[in-house]
Amino acid sequence: MNQQGTAPREPQSFERVLSSMCTEPHPVAREAAERFLATNPGDPTTYPAVADLERAAVETLGEITGLADPHGYVASGGTEANIQAVRAARNLADVDDPNVVAPESVHFSFQKAADVLDVELRLAPTVDRRADPAAMANLADEDTVLVVGVAGTTAYGRVDPVPALADLADDRDALLHVDAAWGGFVLPFTDFAWNFDHAAVDTMTVDPHKMGQAAVPAGGFLARDGRVLDALAVDTPYLESTSQATLTGTRSGAGVASAQAAMDELWRDGYREAYERAQENAEWVAAALADRGYDVVDPVLPLVAADVPAETVAALQDRGWRVSPTGAGELRVVCMPHVTREMLASFIADLDAT
Image (cartoon, rainbow, N blue to C red; front, side):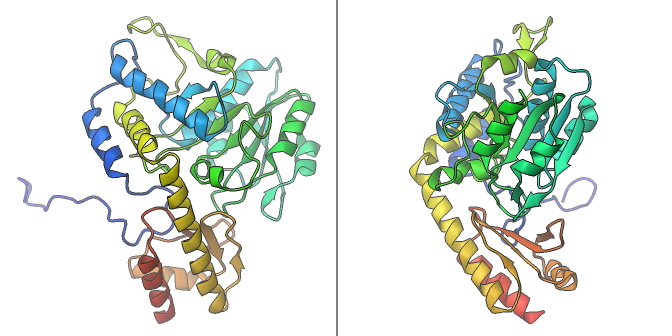
């Protein structure tokens, strides 16, 4: 008990967490985060050790996403990286009324970006839960500064046709951003065309604190060309470093060190094993739900959505399961590294009991 007479709080257990895209960090990531907790990569001249780790992390993220000479940094997460992509595209363009064209399946962080940056966000309908290049082309014009695709959508784990979106961006003289915040650490082991090596992608979001098993917060913002970071940089007159391209100023070195430690430990074989296990679990739970008469969205990546009624979802939540619905109301299960077959079997047993 503390001096106020209340029991100390414990961190969230992951044993019933099924809809989160965060997971328990790998032990090496946890240890690295603790060692670098007080360092600030926002001032790399004062904190050169963590700055070196950040450069190594960006290099590794480039290797994972097919980019030989990456520019970027370890961000707080996908929201910051997506905002930075919009900000860079706006700053580089010479238009009075910039707009961003994206599929309606895009993450809600782009709504925040549009609001903060005073940029119009145009959302196109999808086809089979993926971006429709033709519909997006109808919305794009000479003021379009950024075209957005998603590689692993939040609701259904779908991968947009990135090469076709690259053609659209080129036609409109716009940048192409791919949001691979969740999918970036599983897609290297699939046949999808999604990364810098597959198409003329300009910027990308990829988060080590999701499938990468780093500690929160550890996002990733990558750019093919250094001019993108130049377009984001501001002077920092009272720091040892002279400029800063990141959105936040002071940043904890915990995320940087954790990300590089996890990637150094797991890339490439460890991530492949985690993906294969997660995909097998997704297919198992999808089959279990289909056997019980629910309509299930085929899991092309380790994410399952099924039309479980809202009252049943509420009953599962009452039993302690941390599950959430898609925008259309389906039950959503994300097979993160902490999700085991035994955990899913227990979940299905509770589903049956409701």
